[in-house]
Length: 223
Image 1: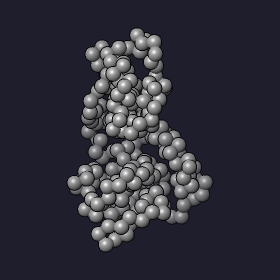
Image 2: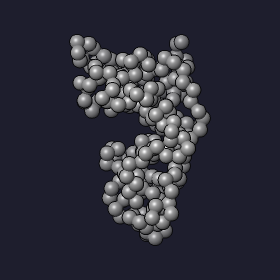
Image 3: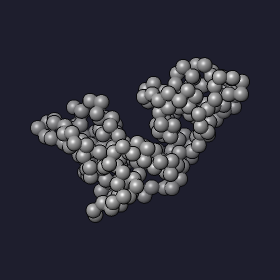
Image 4: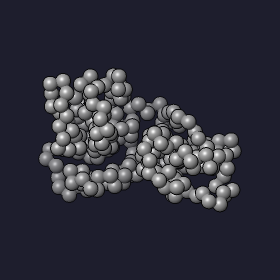
C-alpha cells in the first residue's frame, strides 16, 4: 500500500537532520538547495547526482552522497576533495574539479546503530529496486509499500516497508502476500545498519579504482 511521504519516524527521527545517514549531512542547514552555496546553483546537470564516497576525517568510509551535495560541503569548508572524477565544472569565473571521494575535515562520531527510518534510507537499502518485480528505477519512479498494509495493522517499520514500483503497488493494494499467487518479496526487509551501508558502498564502488582503496583498504591513504 502506498505510504506517501515518509517523515521522521521512530525514536531516532528527531536526530534525522544531524544523522550522517542522510547523504553525509554534516551540517543539516546545507541540505536545502535554496540555502546551499550560491556557486552551486548553476549546476543543474544530471552529473550532479553522480555518487560520491564520503570519508570521515579518519578516512573511514561513512556514506555516499550526490556530487552536488559533495560540492556544497567542499565549498563550505566542511570537506575536501580526496579524489576527483576527471571532469571540471566551470561557473562564476571559477573551475571546480568534480569530486569522486571527499573527506570531512572534522571527525564525526557515527553511532553503530540502525540508521534513521526514512524514505531515502529505505530506497538505499533496497538499492532502488522494486522488492516485488526487482526492476531498478530512479527514486522518483518508486514509492514505499507496507508489506502488511496499514489498513490491516501494518506498522511503518524497517521490517514492513520496502521500495516498490507503482505498478506492483497498485496490483498488491490492501492484500497480504499469502493472498496473492504471483507476488513475493525478493528479499526479507531488514533494518539499515552501518554494516549494510558499507556493503552497498562496496557494490557501488566496485568498478571505481578511486573508491576501492578506501573501501577495501588495499593501500593506506596518506595522512
